[in-house]
Image (cartoon, rainbow, N blue to C red):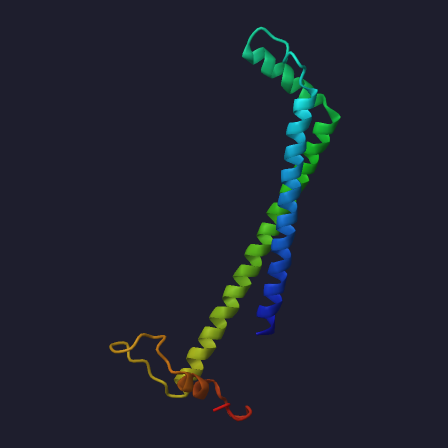
Length: 146
């Protein structure tokens, strides 16, 4: 049970880290757009047609040191985001495995306690609190709280 609590705390940290990375990514994108607007000539890019103007803009953007630096930072942030997402998925998988393990243990204890499931009359989840307390009480435990 303690590991489930640890996982929830780790997930909290991962989600906060993910949010920080996403905010950083958004800020860099905004700075890129503002910088592109700043370095665009007032009369627009030179060229006879749209294709030539687009190529002229791309050349200037590719050679701009600020935009090149932002591009590298964005790539780093995206790599961090992928890593964080993978870590979140791993923690979720571990959490699900622990939950299934707990369910299997509960089923085993219910079976040992003689709590039968009547599929024709009650759903599988229709076990009273008293039956659950009785089933989870094992010899050597403290007295059950009932």
